[in-house]
Length: 128
Image (cartoon, rainbow, N blue to C red; front, top):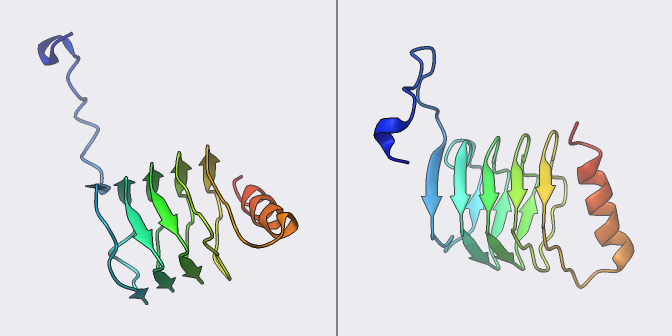
């Protein structure tokens, strides 16, 4: 199928505000950021031992991302979609996950299984 055979996009639609960021690495801690990380489509974003504090990820998509030993302190993940991503030994104290969805997510922590389950249950209760 070529692009010529696809139907035209109706005039009622306009380009969205979600920017795609692919194959990047977060190299330093991020604090009090309310614009830079929201409405993004992150593909294969990586971070190791990074602290995110008061960061808004509103309505972003995390696809194939890898976060190892990161701390997401008081971050906002409202409306985010997590697919095929890994949060190895990362934590989310005080973070919000209202209306977030999760598919094939790895959450491996050094904490007990009960605290890992508490995160999953907490996040799942805020998806509707």
